[in-house]
Image 1 (spheres, rainbow, N blue to C red):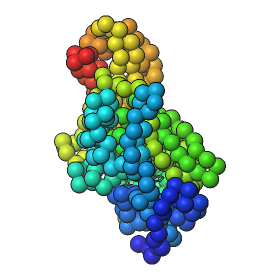
Image 2: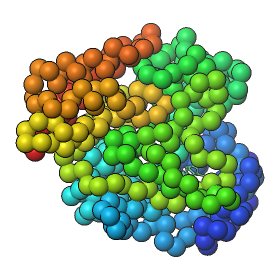
Image 3: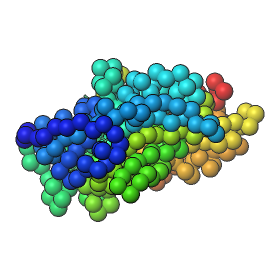
Image 4: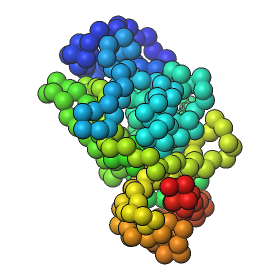
Length: 326
Ligand SMILES: Cc1cc2nc3c(=O)[nH]c(=O)nc-3n(C[C@H](O)[C@H](O)[C@H](O)COP(=O)(O)OP(=O)(O)OC[C@H]3O[C@@H](n4cnc5c(N)ncnc54)[C@H](O)[C@@H]3O)c2cc1C
Ligand code: SF4
């Protein structure tokens, strides 16, 4: 780990004005400090943003919806009464992330910017990895890739994005609010993370120097839930996960939003299945068939074909369970 300078920002404007390629923002530090230790990042200066006022507020929006400041800890978000009542999918996704101690420190903004858990990327010794060293190759593509992508990958990178909250936010059609030197921008959560394409080093739509200030949730989604499937039931990243929000017209599905986690470098929305589910009974065979059809587009790698039925069954179960409770 190399030496670095440390300073605290007192306002969003200060933080944005100070930003340059040699500076990293520090929120909970639960990701950034690992990067410093592993040599994934080596900023010359660190700017602590945790004392910026107002970035830890949670407020209802005038037309309905909720604005969550980026510096809220994961536990603060998951424990907020409006989140528990109106956005259970988000509360459940957060409750399944990391450990209670980490959730007390980790922020919702920092969570969206966590990097892949690909073991080649996080290796302490030099390993071919286009994300770490552009042009060096992808050790996972021909190597051990059981935890890697089944959708949206390229030969340059087959990694997945591991955030649990990001999957819920994609299914909620949340908006990420970012502020940079040119002012504020709104980015759809479902498109915030980038697929690898030819350049796996560009991970999100955040431009250099931009700060995430808040996340906006649209109208409440009380009929929603999250399912995380993992090798052990606590303190483990997802093998696959799914977030589903439904609305109903009597007993039939009126609208469905479905996002998968740990299957691509971004939360993966199943748009086709969402359209096909409209008008169906959540527990019907037709629903099961429509969901399964969406997985015909999956492209598993040598070691991760098991992710396809796992993710498919997770969605089928969520849709059925939400329907039963509605
Ligand atoms: C052992 C372990 C297990 C974990 N398990 C899970 C899990 O199961 N599921 C899951 O979802 N996550 C998991 N995590 C990830 C954890 O949730 C993240 O590390 C955490 O949310 C990051 O938030 P932070 O505030 O600590 O970010 P930091 O470490 O402070 O920052 C991370 C990055 O985001 C940038 N950043 C932070 N805030 C902002 C902002 N507002 N605007 C712009 N840039 C910003 C920083 O500059 C840095 O680049 C785990 C982490 C660990 C260490
Ligand atoms: S999958 Fe991506 S992160 Fe992993 S080794 Fe390949 S290029 Fe690196």
